[in-house]
Image (cartoon, rainbow, N blue to C red; front, side, top):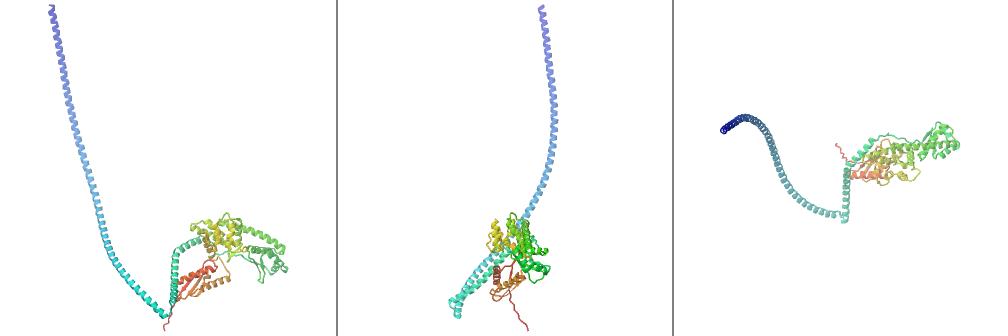
Length: 530
């Protein structure tokens, strides 16, 4: 019994276990089923969400596409309008260019037609020219034959030999060549004057305008006023001892004549003359006139004047801004203060030439300082020309060379009157400045005798030329008017006569400034109606 019950008990447990197993399996299956159902519902919900999202996306996409299409359509319309505008402008430009090209083609066609016409005219002209040349050649041969015949006939009629006829012909040719030479000279002078004279006048006028000076200069006075005839007798002294002592101490000549109230002091040395003039004035003021007093006053006056001369020279160098000048040259410049030329103070004249030389040199691009130095020293020889033989240009050049001046300065001093060849550009500049200073109004005065002699010499030179009928010196000797024979002198030969007269005046006369030569050729026909 125990075994069957045990077996039953075991079978019961087994059934329970099976039931529990089936129950677990059912529960698992139910769980699985529920999970599948939940999964299916989730999938359905997800699919619904996806479908909704897809629908929303499609709607958004359609909206975007529609917007893009609208924008693209607007841009297309704008672009089309812009393109149409540009195209229309381009078309207008092309139409205008086409019109211009058409006009240009028309002009080219006209020019081609004109050129064709000119070519035809040129060909016709060349043809006519060839025919004219042939005709000229024929005429030339004919004229040569006529000339030969005429020469033969002239030889027969004139009874001349061939040599005589040749000489006669050569004389005629020489006269013709002289006329042609005068014509050529006149033409060349006119061409040169158009440029050179205009430029030189501009430079010189500029120099004159930039330099302003008084129209008169001081002149050295050689006459001393005497207050009374009694004082004149005291100056002479007993048996002339005072005047002899005075002349010995000063080295001058004292001229005492019947002219009331005046004693004339004469000497070639302007410094001695000035010393004598001042000493004589001091003696007259002092009243004590005897040989001892004369020697004292002359010595003191010489000492004072030497200081003044040195100061005049220094002032001149400072005013002209000329540096490093030898003291001997400075003293010689001071001596020029007491020297005159044609009534013009030489030191003031030298200052004028210095300034004018600087201005002209700077106008032509040269060294103004060096030109001013040349101008200041150009008449330095006049300070000692009464003591040294020779002309003042050469004396001045020797002085400048002795005291270490540059070669340009030496040549300018030596050649400012054309005595030596100009090897420096500063020499003609100083010469021009010297002429300007000497010829300006009021700069110089000359005596009546020298003035008359110069006028007579001018007329004599002009009258010496063949064909000249009469001449007149006018404008104080600044111009010479020459009347020529109209039958023997033609217009071209008149220019040659004027040039030759001017050349002779330059070679034979000394004068300030320039002399104008005017040749007048006049033909008059006079008839009376009665």
